[in-house]
Each structure stands twice: as structure tokens, then as C-alpha cells.
Length: 340
Ligand code: GAL
Ligand code: CA
Image (tube, rainbow, N blue to C red; front, top):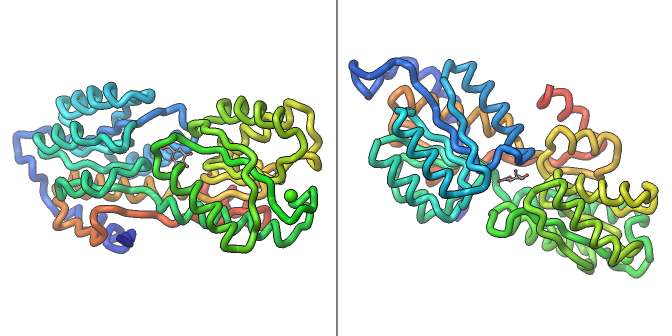
């Protein structure tokens, strides 16, 4: 089913909310707070997203408690239980295991606390269990398509990508976590898009590096040892892993012209800097500022007592923020506007 993101509805919430009253009644404490459960704070993109979210919450005078599950769903369930017991008024959950939100949903529902899932997308059967559940993120397929289009553009501009001139592009793909929507869908859609653009691909190898720069560097080092000169293109499910791949080549003292061409996704600060210095040929901007703003807007509406029917997201509770292509030509806009 095609899902849409609705910003218009959210944009007017701010004003409306000020007028609405507190559903929790008079005896309740006035301080409203947002409980945030994060899958792993060492994740570069999620870290930048949370920084933006903190700022958005400060502007709205929403208090915030952030818990880090460090990769364990069990820990996260315990943390959510604590946040609920401490009386949080809304929950923002970045699931560890996106296929396993049931316990969290049950606990929240029991307390009548609405949940905004973000970045790690629950499946529709779970999200539609209760009306007061939302997801804020981005459409994984769009990012893969954009990455594919960026790469196809370079193939068409420069003969240089097909270094051995065999009419095929020898590539390696670096993937995020195995069950993550962004890993599965980006991998599939980037290669489909390249093929639809008429590029003949030959996959030499792949690595699952869990979004991590260090894991990607290690895996890429092994792959380089197997294919020291053959790799023409490195497609990575995110910037951190693309940068890890570049690190591997640098560590092995390759010159720039001997390296393949690299593409990432996210536009985290080090990723944008690498596009600027042409270490990455491009990336796809995962708009954390907008995601954070929409989450805060929604959290604000909820703590002011709005229920889902008043909030009115006509998109099966899913809100997707569009991605944007980033290359050397427009990277300065992103460095200036979005990250300063
Ligand atoms: C993706 C992002 C990755 C990683 C992952 C964590 O959207 O592109 O870099 O942060 O989320 O869930
Ligand atoms: Ca080739």
C-alpha cells in the first residue's frame, strides 16, 4: 500500500494544541515529559537525529529522558517499563528488533500512553494494533532508488568507472543489519535502479557491517585482499559504512585514482564532508531535522491531550519524510543549512 506523509496536518497542530486541555486531570503533575528509547546511541545517524530531537523538544519546553538499549530488545523492554512507571506522557521508540514491538505496545496501551516509533519501521500488522501508535521515518525504497540514480549518472558521465572496459560494473555492496527495512530494501532497489538505467552489474562481494564504520572497514579490508584491483564501485547502505570502506583503502595506501567510486546514504556530518572532498561521489540525505521536528510536533500534540482521531494522520499512522540526493554540486547547501 502506498503511504503518504502528512506535514500540513502536523504544521497546524502547534497552534491548536495550545488551546486544548490536559486530559490527565487536575491532580496530575504539570511537567510533561517524553520518554525516548533508543536502539543504540553509538549509531552515527541515530545520534545526529537525537541531537536534533533534543533541540526541538527544548523549543517546545518538553522534558526528555533518553534510554539506550545498546542493541538488546530485552533491555529496551525494561527501559520502556521504567519510563512508563516514572510517568512519561508520550513514548518515542527506536526499536531494537523492529519485528518485536508487542510487549512495548501492550505496556503503553495499558497506561494509555501513545507511542511514536521512529527510524526502525514496525510492520503494519503491529502498528495498526492500536490507533495511538505512529511511525516517523523515511521511505527506504526512495533512498535506494536515489542512490542507484546517482551511481547511474556517474557511469554515464565518466568512462572511468568501467576501469577494465568490459562493459560491466564490478561492485561490492555493504549492508546494514540483516532484518532492517533500510538494509533489505536499499540493497534491492539500488541494484534494480542501476539495471533499469541500463547499467550491467557484476557483484563481486558483499559485507554485512551493521551500519558501523569499523565493521565496514574490517570487512572491506578482507574484500580488497580478494579483489585488489577489480572493484569499480562500492554501494553502501549508509555513509558510516561507505566511510569505513574508504578507510580500508587508505589504510592499504591506495591512491585516490586507484580506488573505486563510493556512494552512501544519510548525509551525516562526516558523510557530507566526504562528499565535499570528493571521497564519496554522492549520498542521499536522510532528513533528520525534519524527522525530529515532526516527532516533536506530534509528541507536543500528544502531551497536550490529543488522541489520534484529533491528530488525524491519514496515512495509516505512518509519516515518511522525503530523501534528497547530495553530490558535489549541492553539498554546500546541506552543510550550511542543515547542520550548522
Ligand atoms: C537508517 C540509517 C542508518 C542507521 C539505521 C539505524 O535509517 O540510514 O545509518 O542509522 O537507520 O536504524
Ligand atoms: Ca568493468
